[in-house]
Image 1 (cartoon, one colour):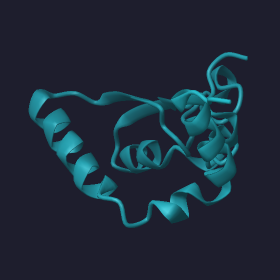
Image 2 (cartoon, one colour):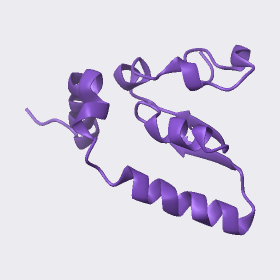
Image 3 (cartoon, rainbow, N blue to C red):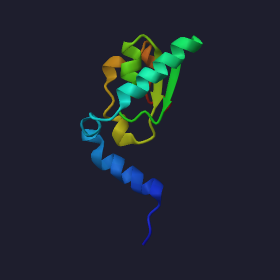
Image 4 (tube, one colour):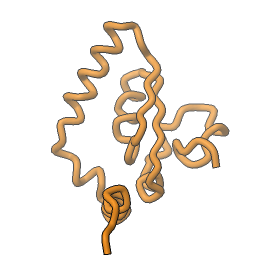
Length: 102
């Protein structure tokens, strides 16, 4: 029996969603976000959209730095880990902490 890489990734994300942020605390996310912020400031950009935003950690950081950031995550287990306290108003356009649509 073979399993696709997409299915394998989905299984991994589902199994580790509750500890995802803890697993990635030593990642260089801060360096990357700093670079993205520098580019945005240089180019005069403020709106950012994070596709595959995992638990929303990068979106939270960008929002806390005054950026207009949004994210979308296809893995439901990771969607459930999103911290709703950082969602922009109005929340009526967000069906579940960053999951647009139904």
